[in-house]
Length: 536
Image (cartoon, rainbow, N blue to C red; front, top):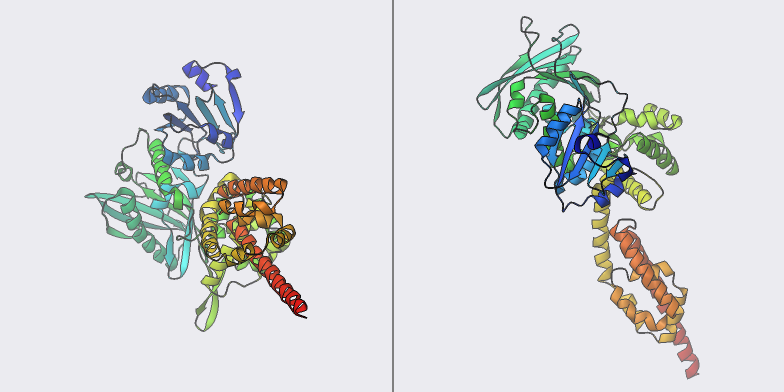
């Protein structure tokens, strides 16, 4: 173990393997923690080390690690803002804890047998490579959205190749410096000219946000045949996706663009990019998964791992009897064009993932049937309702998805459901006339009604007003009252941890109101009949 060798820690018998959830419980954020991400040719860290202690010299450990392992070392001091982003990046992975929780070692998802190449940085999860989002921003041309991914970042790229490609250049003016950038797109067509111009305009805005500086474009256009084909710099490779197909791209930018970034603790270019990406990801973590401030099934599938995709595309789709046509209506919608309806979609970067994991019959129908939602509002509504069903399935333990997917669904769908549920609950709590009418009946009649009422309905009725249950104590047996109090506390705790939906409590209150109102009506009718008999 590297920590034992470097720091003279006790042997491995003081180490134990735990899961990520247990680590989160043990990580005392009130203490000072230093972390060191170690990575080679992958944007996901090979492994991360967290060490507790104010006396630890971060610079010294960084130097020792650099001397000992042939990996980039990204040091940092843990803050509360790091917790959720770091746990997201680590994913579902084993953790080694040692020295009575004084250090943790977290292994990444990056495969142990993956090829290591110091000349390139492989990008395993595009949505988390936030630095790339500023270099190649999301685009839209007319009503068509263009999405993108990132495959690798090369530090010693080859010469630009004109054969079979479209080459462009753009001279950005930043902080009174010329920053020349070059673009390679596979193929040649007028649409590529339009796309490159739109991309440069979007980059002007995104680079301004990244660098917090004013950015202008001096010159831009197709690269002339006699231009330099081996410009210095680094090259980001990936794909652009639109309804018309897939377009491979390469974007080359010079070192002076990186020099405009804020200084980082890493001296190498690769380390500076990774450290910058870590800070950008942490800052954008709350919204990095959204499609234009809308949370869609496409966002969820794009972020999901293989296991989660199998559960969603197989178990959930089949159990909800969703057809290929039903699924298309979650991604495609109609827009009028020349007197006819034309199909289009919002950014759909998870299409390939979806098709790979769907059952064969549903996949074939998804591809062949040309249908979609009637309009974008219907598409958004369908997405919202499906994600609510998915979230409920997770909350009820019917679907066992990873903690990352639970986190994202909780933030986007669970929070919305909770807010809507609280509004509904507030209205119900302000109209408790049926309950008060019941309490005005005689004790024996109240006892009869409570004896017929479902126990869970009675429990949910007092979850948000536990003090009122004292009114019912005289009408319940001691055992049932104690059991009810225990169930109320249990339900309150499960609501706090989002294991029970507030809407379930609202449903119970509505059921109580219906059954109590019906019972009161019957009692009044009975009393009227009895009063009539007595007069006779």
